[in-house]
Length: 155
Image (tube, rainbow, N blue to C red; front, side, top):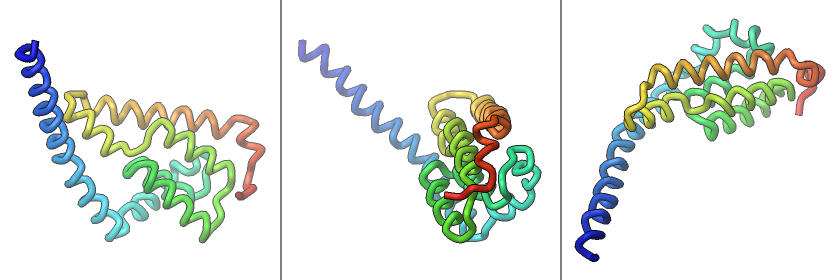
């Protein structure tokens, strides 16, 4: 009985270690890239170039930056950025709801996609699918009467 279980346990142990190292190959360069993006304010410059998105999603311009941070870097960075920006220039409740809707569907796009890629998934289908689906759902949500009534009211 022990002879049968030993190869299984060995495969579990070494398989887990192999997957962990594969994930680290993705995560460590990603963390370095995030620090570079933050140091050179490249995300803010990208937000300025994508102003048309804030109009399509019926959001204020200052709301686009935390949305981009959340999409690229994940919920933790996105939420931290959202709180920090809201302290400086208040963001309307409506934008909080729309950012939450978008990020619920599509957050941490680079990290998550690369992790799925390591597991063998098609990264282009995952990335574009999540972005398009999130945009469509948020576009529709922005036009719902319950969200539109929130207007410029801030938290």
